Image (cartoon, rainbow, N blue to C red; front, side, top):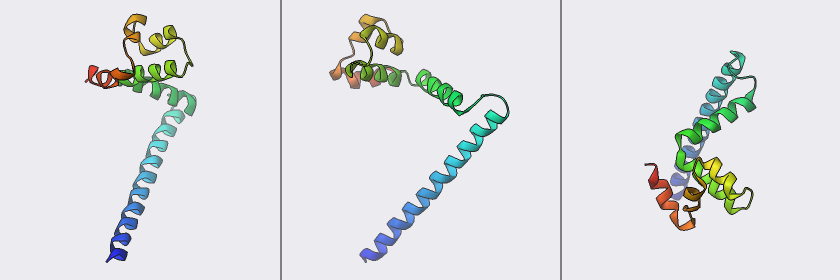
Length: 107
């Protein structure tokens, strides 16, 4: 009985791996097509643009990244506020306890 369950689990994992590989190759082909078409000079430029677009779509992630950089003392509070797209005093209000509020703020 357990061997049959294990078989189905392993079978499902193999299918999942194949789907991930297929999606990855499709995405890679799309990126390569944009580079070959002259839309981007290289992968690094594409990735930078994609990350920038991600942060514009997910404002809470933009703020969360700035909060994390500030907590690790990798940036000043002024730089963190700038990265978050907030005024310094507004950024300062986001504390460790406000993470839930941070994510609900943009929903």
